[in-house]
Every structure is written in C-alpha cells, then in structure tokens.
Length: 315
Image 1 (cartoon, helix red, strand yellow):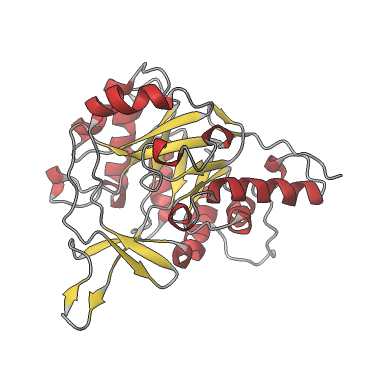
Image 2 (image 1 turned 180 degrees about the vertical axis):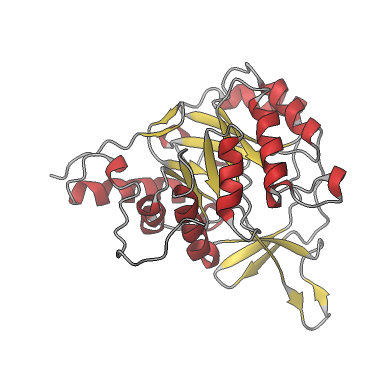
C-alpha cells in the first residue's frame, strides 16, 4: 500500500490543500464545470479575468487550433464586477476550496478600484493580477512588459486590498527575472507564470488572419518548455512563491514545474481537451509521490539537480 502524501502548499499567507489550480480564462466562473469536476478537490479555482465594467471582447473568430496548442483572442470578455458579485460569487462561496479572482484594467486607477471593491468581500481568497493588458495611458503597451509599470500596478493593488496578491507575468519580455523582481519588490505575495505567448495564424487560401483580432495568445504543450524555463528563472530571482502555468496536460508536466521550483501549478488549455484534467493531474501527482515514498509534495519543490557548471539563473 502506497503512502498518502501531504499535498498542501503555501502561497504566501494562503494555504492550499493541494497544488493544482485552474488557469484563468479556461474554466469560466467554475459553474460551467460543476457537473464534470468536483471543484472542492482542487487547490483553488481561478475565475476568468474580471474588469470593472462588462467587456464584449474581440470579434470572432476567437480561437484557432495550432500544432500542439491553440491561439485565442477572446479579448478578456467578461460580465463585469457588479454582475460577478451578484450572480457568480454567491454560488462560488459554496465550494470548499479557495477562490482566486483574476483582475485586469487598462489604467493604474482601474486596478486600484477593482482591488478596493473586492476588499473585505467574503469568499474571495486572493487576487491574481493580469498585467498583460494594454495600458491606454501609455500608448497601448502592456503593463507587464515594463518593470516600472509592473511595480506600479502591483503597488496599486497591494495598497488597496486585504487579500494576498498574485501577479501573473507575461512571457513577452526579454528577461522574465526583471519583471519578477519588480513585482516582488512592489509587494506581490506570489507570482504566476506564464501567460500566453503572442502569435498569429494565416489562412493561405484567403490570405487573411485566422483570428478576427489578427493576433492572439498561444497556449498548450507547445509553450511548456518556455514556461518551465521562465519559472526556473523566476524562482531563482525572487523569494516569494511561484505558480507554474503553460501547457500542463498531465501530472508529468505538472511535476516538471514543481521540480523546477513552482509551489503550485495552474491547468489551462488541457481543460478544453479533457474537462477532468485537473483531477487526473492531482491523482497522478499523488500516486507519483506515494510510489516513491515522498511524504510531502513540498519535498519536490525546487528539487531540480543541475551540474555545477550549468547555466546560472542570475541575470
């Protein structure tokens, strides 16, 4: 009989029963999966990105399948803060797990206002801050590509909330360590990475973009090696916990992130292929630990063995 390992993990002040979470934008508001997945078994449910006011998102087509992944240009369509609090949150409170609300804005003020509106709200365990959004006050450049803006957004949220703050980093930068340090020094309790990589696809018959928005975010197994490398870099650049995201399809993929140093993982694109992917991954991690006599999942975090002359994660 295999050992039943302790699967609990800590993300700053937040303690999760296990390291498996959903990724924002791939799991709706949770209720869409309630008949397929026992949500209470998950470490946390991260709902789709939330803005102050409802957003229609981008014109269709919004999703294109790619080799080993998909491109999406949903445009962060959502019902807005007011309807979320009235229509979605009451049911979400009934789930016996942590609820993490992903927020985004197009100005520093919008981030601060969202954080303030969710301050003290029962049932919300933490905020995940999407900084991959265009900053309308600075010509549309994403907040997360500029370390100064990364810090300012982080400070604005941390200064207006009583919840733990998780900053979700964009991979569309030269050096992820710079952004990670900026967020950590500005008050983030944890980091999650990576968000999608920017990409596009073209229909060669019509010679038009396959996405209505021309470009979109690439996710799925194709980006996993990039994500693992960036997680490894971030883990070795900051002292706060890191959540790994990017192309996790099974427990082996999740374990790569954890061994690289991630304290927890988020499952995204896999939910479109297998709605029960999160639970399958959780079971697989537990069996892996049990078969090897690993008493706690935390023993695996950052257990990567590297040669003495290997690449240094420091800038």
